[in-house]
Image (cartoon, rainbow, N blue to C red; front, side):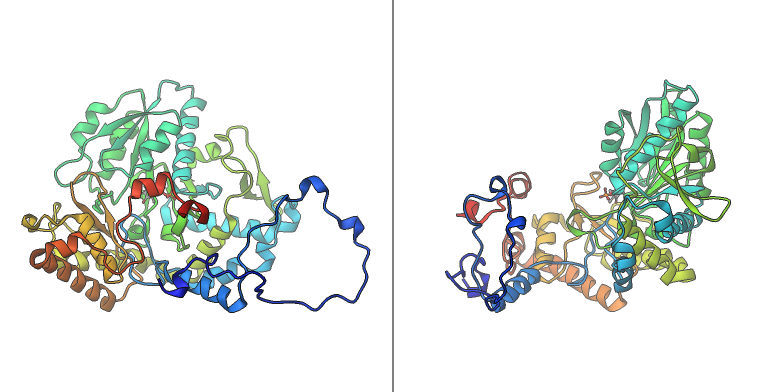
Length: 485
Ligand SMILES: *Cc1c(COP(=O)(O)O)cnc(C)c1O
């Protein structure tokens, strides 16, 4: 093992320090600052004793083991791993905002409330919906909030029978999960052979117990639901509402608006479409937008502009409740607002270029990978493993082999509609050269699957760890040095 592959505890030497200050020559009476005995630890903390250079190398080497958008191409489908411009961080870290306290009074946080308010206005403009709450902390949290709005709308009208929600079989796993957490019963609507919602199946499901339908458009296969206007008419006629899962709004930016398609409620993942780094589970933001007839059902608190041009934090008794202690992940809102303003009118190119990039990769690889739904895709698409099934090389093997070439794996085994799903989303921020190199590597892996299948099946060969037991790693992670020994 290389010296710097060792854990920092293993290179620790008693008495070694990074920095030492000269002994103080002042005598200070600090008895009033002594920590009460019951709060003191009984044994000293076990900390590594290392030099400053050891510490710097430790963190640098650990960070090199990580992989992110800033390391290389990250084509993870349904995740929109686009580049997050540094200006967003710069603005979000400005002490005038990062130093605010959530309990400050309205008067002293007018600037922050203005940003909250104007971000909501910008999202309304981009989606065709009347108003937004920015308080939910993630996409799934936005889904739950949106469903609470849906339920509240029916309850306020005394329509108490509507306890079931329709979810397509191709939906993201969070959709049925959020519906269940909201106490709604899930009814599955089938997809047609071309991957879109089967309107005939839908017609048979609609009655006065249906609260609404949750849809993703383009759906999880990256395919546009061309029947969406007809679906909206059918669901509305039956008294239901339409929920739009806008986690991946990327292909829609500048091209199409959920509000215009007939959707009543939606969430957006600011940490996907509106550029916030989102590895490792956060921080996120899942604003929920609603059509005009649902604004009163949005959760408390809301930010409004009063007649004296002052921003106010308002609570309403018709709201569906409260979903966050304060105003949400404000830093993420600031990054999204910076992103929207810095792109300006150019934001209309995001959707078309993301779509062009996805189709370019799809068309370049369809000779070697099996394309189960052959149509123009939006921002992402799905292969069902290699075209040549004789090698026994699976989607997992391909994903692992890509790591050897310095690429993050695409999303695999999702959506569940196919056995060997490989879901690829290149995003609009990648150059043609990067895409060409990825296409080249994907072809090379397909060739290796033929010429040396065992080598592909035992990949990765160059990463710090090989194939992990992913279930055990997730359910019973060993996070402490002691546990590893
Ligand atoms: C990412 C995603 C979600 C969930 O978002 P989180 O922020 O991870 O909770 C929901 N739906 C779709 C389609 C997504 O891609």
